[in-house]
Image (tube, rainbow, N blue to C red; front, side, top):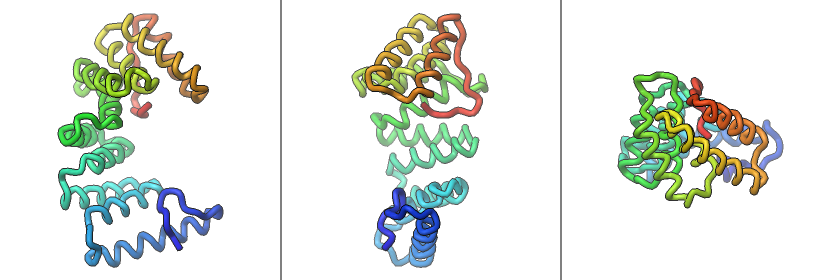
Length: 210
């Protein structure tokens, strides 16, 4: 049986794909008979996302929101999806909707803060808002989350606060070192640290979220 759409119990890639295809077909054919259509649409969206079919996933996240517009987690999921498609302004709008519904939604806080701090488009970049978002994320995590601190560093640097940016990323690197963090992430943070130490902000055109 196909129990788990995200981490299917099959080692065979072919079996996983067949399981996923069955789930998609079943949900799409019987959606009108399902008791909670909002949940079913969200489930279907995540199935499509697992295949990197971003447009289809966005469609079904949107359908879920139409039925249940007060679900912050689905707004956040749609925002992440739109960002991956490069639809940044729409993505920002969805992150903001998610945070209106749940101001403490850590992923949305960090993602929106990162975008507003690092985007190359100066019409979108907003260092003041980015700092507020990043500081809130760090407070919620007791300044113990290195990725939130990395975002805080980028936000400070975007506003010209390079000493504060340096302090934030040094703390992030200390936490990464203590926890045996990912080497690639550590190297990326070290590169940003060198930028801030030289009085430069960090700009990330493709907007990967830390």
